[in-house]
Image (cartoon, rainbow, N blue to C red):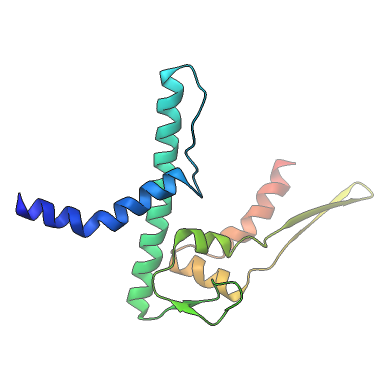
Length: 146
């Protein structure tokens, strides 16, 4: 029993942070006005899945930074040189806020332009074990869907 309590207490900050994520930003579980229990269960399951995604992204990025024995700079607005060894998923995702896909049609021909990835964005993809090519595939998927 003592071991269980010790493990629980060591994880309390993480558990509380996860509940905070569910109740606030980015997931925002708020009072809902739904009439069916199935809807409530579905929303909770969806938010739980989103929370697992956020946690997994953080875990993978932090583990990669540990292996590199390095930190990640460029995540803090106003202080681009500040390094972190334990980035949050929210900060990692926020680094991709400035990405745009522009589609222009001239004389019936569609032209696509995507914002190029910054060095920080490329590093984040590398930390997560993702190839930069997936970024270019976004525009290609748009090309194929039209």
